[in-house]
Image 1 (cartoon, rainbow, N blue to C red):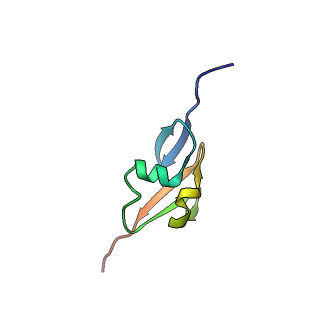
Image 2: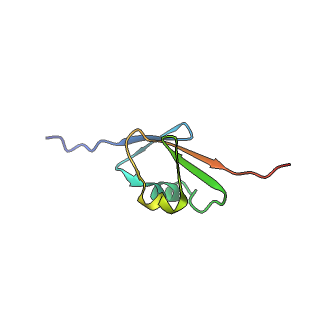
Length: 74
């Protein structure tokens, strides 16, 4: 039996990231210093995740996360 831990591979805005385990979306955004940013929307595998669901949404191997920041303009 191998004692080597396999990493999960995900992408955030098309950039590759590796983590030692599955983790809640909230923890991922905290680690990336994005959770306190106002006016962001987050999609996991093309499904928008409501802010109140971030703590209960688990990020798994090969998930694709898109973070969009709203901007003002005229």
